Length: 65
Image (cartoon, rainbow, N blue to C red; front, side, top):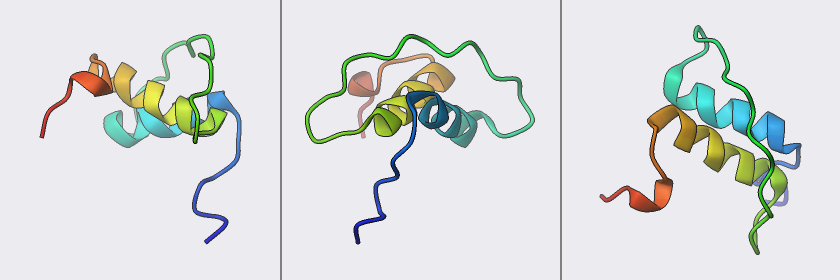
């Protein structure tokens, strides 16, 4: 259970998040500056979140079910 949340850099997380939406055959955009890490999160998970947001072109908080 301890390995469920991956430790890593913001940059690594951004790439994982972006490529999970856009795929592996697209070029990577520039990595944004690292925001402050939210409570109960890690820099890697913040990177995943920002990567997904960049790939979708919108904030995750704006998405609805």
